[in-house]
Amino acid sequence: MGLLPFSEKDSPTISKAGSGPEPNGLNPVSNASDSPSRRNGRRSLVVLALLGIILMLAALGCDSDAHQSVLSSTPWTLDGANGPVARDQLLLFNVLLWTMVVVFVLVEGALLYAAIRYRRKPGDPLPPQTHGHTPLEIAWTIIPTILILGLGIWSVFVLFKLEPGEAIALAAEQGKEPLHVEAIGHQWWWEFRYENALPDTGECSAPNVVPAGESRDPECELITTANEMRIPVDRPVIMTLKSDDVIHSFWIPKLAGKQDVVPTRDNQMWFLAEDTGMYYGQCAEFCGTAHAQMKFRVHALPEAEYKAWVDGWGKPVDLSTADNPAAAQSGQLVFLGDGQCVTCHTVGSADQVDEVGEGVQHARMETYIAYTEWLQKSPGEQLADVRTGQEPPTAFAAPNLTDLGARTTLGSGLVDLNRETLRQWIRNPDAIKPGNRMSELAAIYQTRPDHRADLTEDQLSDLVEYLMAQK
Ligand code: HEC
Ligand SMILES: [Cu+2]
Image (cartoon, rainbow, N blue to C red; front, side, top):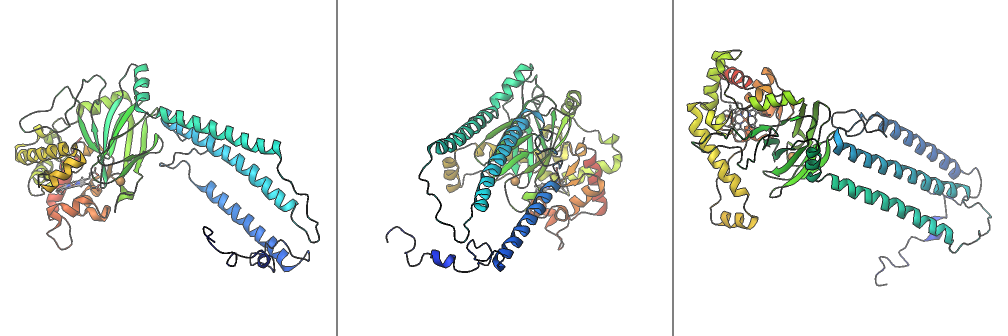
């Protein structure tokens, strides 16, 4: 008996299988040509065919022009992809897919044809027995080998082209430098930190946080933003992907395939947008409660418009020119004081905040720097620190709101940004994004029994005016 999973006795016996009409009606050895089982067989074939047609129609209904689809409306074209990365990937996908469709149809077709055409009929003698057919066997070994080797080698070449080195080479051809952006996955939103927002800047190694008493290096266009990335068209963008907590996955279907975002490990990918416009992104790895709501947007702008955004970013906003200056000014006080928003959020650079918030903001930034540095340690060192109680306090991360007024969405791409939605968000973020970390952790949501913000209607309106003025 030994290795066999079942004994001769237990095995399904051949004689039983052929002894009567099977429930599925596909019994090959029925005696009369119009027996009930044969009719059943025909009926199930019709049902199968209908099912197949319905499935195919359903598949045709898939909206291939959807924001988050990489496919084109005409399946074999590359219209759905933008830029060299997405195009290479889609071309590889298309060729793989259609080669496999052809192989599938040929092989399954031959199989079905043989099964139906040469099926056993009552009284048939034993057909001639073939033991090996050398030319045929050589053919069906060589053809798949060529196909698989060809597609395999090509896939590896496409993989090489996804390396950031390719982006550097491409940018050099255009006399440019690639744009370097860090994307940091947080439960459940994206942070974007630009290291060299404009190509002419030198090396900037400092993180985009400014220690107390120091100001932002004007040479370094360090920008921190959230959930909406602005990039210039035709400049390769190299993304460094980091995670603050669990594994996420960074995916902008129309620009590039997905790449995992793994804690304690930096992954890289690149893409280039050839057309201006908005591209939708999405976290593509289950990362907790609000995973499906962890979207983002990429705005590919004409060079000049992009430069204007970079130059303007973080410049102090003159609240006296806001739509409603008085409200915006009191809103700032709520933001820095009663609302405690500044304990988690940054508006402008640390050196630019109003005196009221400076202390808090600087303290938070210092914790944040300490924490960021601590994250660079090896897992072993981190564990040792945890054991001896030396790990830095976890600085709570939250979207940088510096350019909020210029964004189009709220809650990491969930709803359109306008005064109404912003007010709703501040009053009760859970109504828009269940499970978000803001209402879970901010003190103002813990005091009222209904977990809404402990702010007056006026304070809410003022906050809205203040935040909408940040652009
Ligand atoms: C405990 C830290 C914390 C405090 C305090 C806090 N927030 Fe937040 N806030 C967050 C987090 C985390 C998010 C991201 C939530 C998400 O999208 O999942 C967020 C998101 C936001 C957003 C949406 C940003 C975007 O790009 O989608 C706005 C606007 C905002 N907060 C405003 C405020 C205001 C106004 C206050 C003060 C009344 C405040 N927050 C207090 C942590 C905080
Ligand atoms: Cu995620």
